[in-house]
Amino acid sequence: MKIIVCIKRVPDTEARIKLTDDRKSIDPSGLKYIINPYDEFAVEAALQLRDGQGGGEVVVLTAGESAAGEQLRSALAMGADRAVLLRTETTLDGLATARVLAAELKDAGADLVLFGMKAVDDDQQQVGPMVAELLGLPCVTVVGEVAIEGDAVVCHREVEGGVEVVEVPRPAVLTITKGKYEPRYASLKGIMAAKKKPLEEKAVEAPAGRIELLGLDYPPERPSGKIVGAGADAVPELVRLLRQEAKVL
Amino acid sequence: MKILAIAEQRDGTLRRASHEVVSQARRVADAVGATVDAVVFGPAGIAGAAGELGRYGADRILVSEGEHWAQYGPEHYTAALASVIGQEQYFAVFLAATSRGKDLAPRLAARLDLPLATEATALSVDGGELIVTRPLYAGKVFSRVKLHGSTRLVSLRPNAFGAEENPRAGAVESLGDLAPAGAARLRVREFIPAASTRPDVAEAPVVISGGRGLRGPEHWSMLEELCEAIGPHCALGASRAVVDAGWRPHGEQVGQTGKTVAPQLYFAIGISGAIQHLAGMRTARTIVAINKDPEAPIFKVADYGIVGDAFEVVPRLAAEIRKLNEG
Image (cartoon, rainbow over all chains, first blue to last red; front, side, top):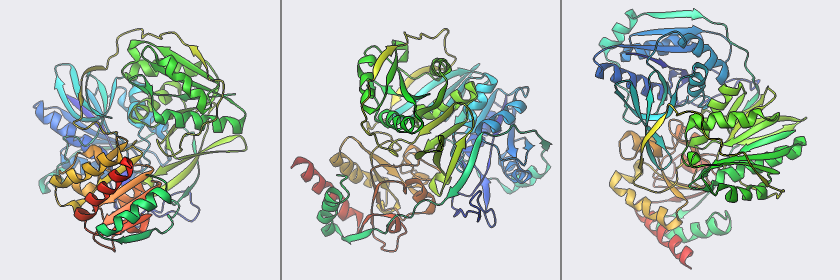
């Protein structure tokens, strides 16, 4: 079984994001980068599926700048077998990213293509289903648990009000959420081994994006609020303010 | 020129987020000189319910009725909506970024080769062009973007806009049953309902989130009681710390690695306010913080704060709100 996991390099979620003076991009200086946390769940899911099947290959794939090799190495250290970096300096929008990935995946012979259900940088939540659509593959989103039953892939989707158990034939595209997938820490042995695992880097032509960035802004400052009081005695006043001033009760 | 608003039903009732979508379509349509079509697929009887979209500004309401629409199947929905969108030269297509909308929007964008902006929190029109504001990094930053293409696809974050009434004719037209041509590859085996019937934290107008200050999962009954007192539109949320500790499911997590929410009213209880949590809830309209530590960062974004022990404040708050609702 061959599983390809598409991952993305993103700024650490604990980081404060600073904008450049022209407000057209974020200031990368001093930023720590990580694998998108949802992609880490997807890598974990792939490793568990591979090991549960008693073999196969997990390939990690990303499109972006060379620096993303660092995140591919982290996934290799977790236990993925090899990595591919589709190098482009262009900033890609969702559909352009999907096209670059789909071109690579088209003849890659994957049984499963996994994505994190969203990236925590641009929060677009779109590339996985777009790739599926471009490749004509079935797609299940927001999957917290995957099982292989013969040719079928059984997914537990986390939807409003419960869990939907969905079955699709292979090959398929899945977008993964945390569910039962707690990402393993890379062991020292894993980190050493990752240095020797193959990481192929190739330049790709990226299609022109159609989402034009006009500018970035910080969120509006919230006007400073008030401390209503201390302890349970402040509750009646809080309720009065919520009802009469904020009009939300 | 026309704008299409994709409405969503569940169990034969239109969802609140769809009213927002139609009313925003109306607002943009008025600014660019367009008319508004709404479209809704649902089980028998949905045509009757769909008429209410006229109240929010739909000129025309396209309806397909059939039992095959009772449940969401992404393949049939994508195919049928793609054909509806393809029949007109729509300036823009709007839908709600509900869990269904999030699943559907990228499929439509790829199928029809449309530029897509998801989870918009504001829309404006400048020189006849649509400008979409959407959060990045879960709300640490906002971007303003322009979509290049003849049809722009935009999903709108639930609760971020509000539904304004702006009545139009709302003439209902049937699209027929649009029965699927073949079987879907994606087959739903079963639905396991959650133990709680509360709305999803990303869509509820009132959210009560608990953090490590609650000291253990056994104390969530206290938040449930407060939720109960407020009403069925209230959902429970959680900080990353308590989800990581296994006290609460990841589906309830608010923040950059969970859900970004924009409710009318947000209670942060025993949550100190880590930057990735603040990013996920700072667009809430009114924020209430209850925390023992007066220096907790959560008080910097809260409209109202109580410095105190959640174990004393929360039960009292539930009692006062119950009294209010009964009186």
